[in-house]
Length: 413
Image 1 (cartoon, one colour):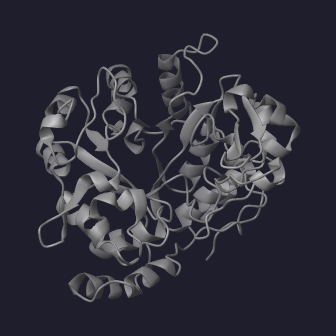
Image 2 (spheres, rainbow, N blue to C red; image 1 turned 90 degrees about the horizontal axis):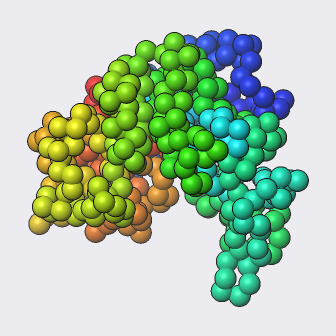
C-alpha cells in the first residue's frame, strides 16, 4: 500500500512543507489492501457475497460513508498523523479528532483526557511525575494501574511524548512492562516515530488529505470550570479552530455524548450545529436529562426521538448493536431504536466496525445484539449491509476504513 509511514523528526507543529506533501498525497491512488477480499472470502455464499466479490477489482474512491475512527487504529496508533494518513489512503471521506485540552487550555487529539498512560510512553519519561495516579505494579489479583492526564501537561510537554498502540499490560511489575498489552489481532509495526497532533494540526492535515471532519468534544476528567475555562468556552474553542482555518461548516460534523454541548452548538453556532452529532450512550449513562434506554422499547427513550428532533438535533449516533437485532429466523434486522429514529427524521451514524477482532466467538460488545448470528468474520459485511440498506445509516466509523470504503464503493454510497 502506498501509505506514508515515515516518522516525523519530532513532535512539532505541522509545517507548511508537510501540508504541501499531504496535498500531493491526497491525489495518490487509494487502496483497499487485502482485508476486504479476506472478509468477502469468509462470507456465507449468497447474493451479497456475489455482489461484493464482483467489486474486488474496482478502483477505490473516497466516500463520506467511510469514517476513520481515530484514524486507522486497527494497526496504527490512534489519533496520530500516520493513523489518519492511512485512513485517508483507504478512502475515508471523514476523519476524527477526539478533542481534549492541556493545562494551558490548548486543544489536542486524544480519545480521553486521562488516557496518556495507555496511549503514550509518559510512564517511562520524566513526565511520569505529573500522573494523577502514579504507576502501581500488579499485586496478586490486583492489576497494575496508573492515570495520566493531558490537563496536567502544557502543550510543549505533551509534544515530547511518543504515541503508542492503546494498550497496557495489567500484569506488569514495572512501567516499562506496562507499555505492552497490545491485542494479538492488532500490531505494533507502525508505532515507531508516530506523531501526536493538536486539534488545529488535525484540521490542516485532514483538509490537505481531502477529507472532511468529525471532531468529538470529549468529557473532561477535571472539574469544570478549569482555571476559568467553562464547558461553553471549551465547546466554542473547538468550533473557533475551524472558523480560524476557513473550513466550510458543511464539512464539519461536531460530536459529543453531552446533549448540552449539542444544544450549545445548535443555539450559538447554528451553521455547525445543524450537523452536530449526538453520540448516544443512554445504554449506560443516566442523569437528570437522559434516562437509561432499551433499544427495543421505545417507551424507555428519554428524550424521545421526536423530542430530540424538536431540539434541533439532526444526527444521532449510537453503537452498532443498538441499531440491529435478530428476528425469529435469526436474520439481522433493524431495532426499534433504528425505526423510531428514522421515523422522527433523525439521520443515523454508528460506531465502530473493525474494533472487535476475529468474530468467530460472537464479536463482543459491538455485536452483542446479534451475537447468536456472529460466528465468522464475514458477518462484518452482513451487518454493514443491514446498517446501510435497512437501517439507512449515513456513515459508519471503522478502525480500518478500507472495509467501509470498499462496501460503499460497491453499493454506490
